[in-house]
Each structure stands twice: as C-alpha cells, then as structure tokens.
Amino acid sequence: MGCCTGRCSLICLCALQLVSALERQIFDFLGFQWAPILGNFLHIIVVILGLFGTIQYRPRYIMVYTVWTALWVTWNVFIICFYLEVGGLSKDTDLMTFNISVHRSWWREHGPGCVRRVLPPSAHGMMDDYTYVSVTGCIVDFQYLEVIHSAVQILLSLVGFVYACYVISISMEEEDTYSCDLQVCKHLFIQMLQIIE
Image (tube, rainbow, N blue to C red; front, top):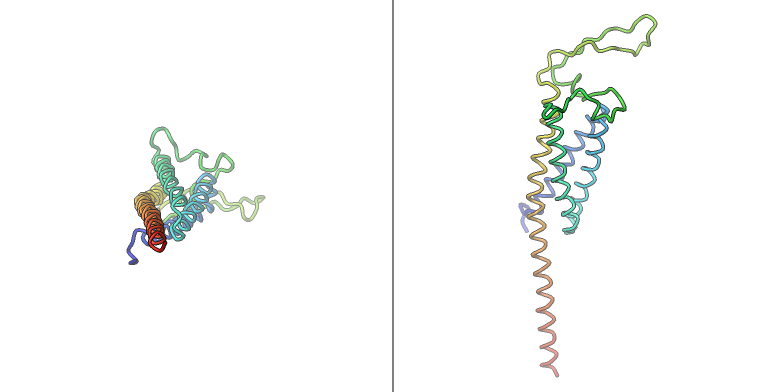
C-alpha cells in the first residue's frame, strides 16, 4: 500500500486535529473558558480513539470518530454564532465559563497587536491587583480569532468525516472479501478432502 491511501491520510488528519485541539485547549485554559475546555477534552479523546481505530483497523472506533465529527462541527458552528452574536447570543455573557468566573476569551486582552492600558494598584490595594481599563490597537478583534479557530476545526472535521467514511467503507469491503475468501477456502478444502477420499 502506498502512503497516500485514505487510511494514511486519515492518520495525518487526526494528528493535525490533535495539534489544533491542543493549541485551542491551551488558550481556552488561559481564558478560563470551561465549556470549550470540556468540549476540547472530549474532542481530543475521540480523535485519539479515531487515530487508534485507523492504525489498528478497527472500523467501530472510526465510526465513533465519524459521529463525533458531526457533533464537533455543530459545536463549532455554535461557537461561531456565539462570538458573532448571531441569534440573540452575546459574547459578553458568562455562558462559556458556566457563570463560574468573569473571565472571557484570552484573546480579548492578548490578541496580536493588542495594548492593554492598566490602572496601577491603589495605595491600600494588593501589589498584583490590576484593573484593566482598555485594550486598544488589536490587529484582529478577539471574536474573529475565536471564529478562525472554530472555522479551522470545522474544516478539519469535515475533511476527517469524509476520510473516515472512506476508510470505513474500505475496511468493510476488506472484511466482506475476507469472509468470502474464507468461504471459498472452506469449499476448496472440502472438495480436496472429497478428492482424497
């Protein structure tokens, strides 16, 4: 088999998805975004399962991966709608943090080119206590960075879905061929025994 088979491509795609999900997980941890952290964690587990299924020729694991990619696309479409404030959603709510904290996306204050203007601590305040006044000069607004992350996840998932379906169909054909070959071998063995008798 050549290296450009569907199976090999799915392995590479799963590796790309893992790298992308781990990168996203890091930035969601930095922003205390608990809902995306849980989603990314599940995604990483299922991608590893899909990778294992692809390497070990386990079509059922690849089927789980295929179903998950459809759910993952749905989640990322929701994230895009959330940050673009589509359908009554607001990026300023605590939905992504489960109302546990007031943190927002890490990219809000640390995006490319962003300059934070801080108010120094008050005389009776803590030395580490900073109140952010404003963030200016961002090359790309944070919501668009989040949308780009989700769009990349959607693209990888859609391509992964197609390759996973292809690998499942190929492995099912191989199983059918294998069972057919066993029946042919059994039939030939029985005929050979009859000839010997």
